[in-house]
Length: 96
Image (cartoon, rainbow, N blue to C red; front, side):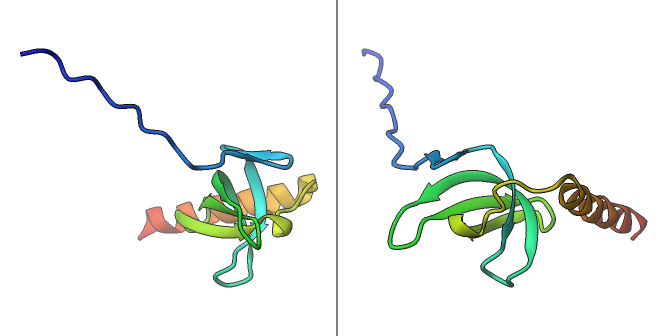
């Protein structure tokens, strides 16, 4: 019996859009509650509104962000603020 050929899975996911690409760390506004958060882009959805699926580093889950709501050039203070929120949450979880 011969070996089976492995089929290549073709991905329809878009990993680059405008100035962003998959694995970019961004500050964005969550659609779910309208709050700003820090996340890592996984892929994009292009339709009537361009969106990105992001792994939210504050919540620890997937979120959807409208590409227009991603902060293009976050200030150092804003980045530090977001990272301190994440560090504060992990400290609270360890105490529990």
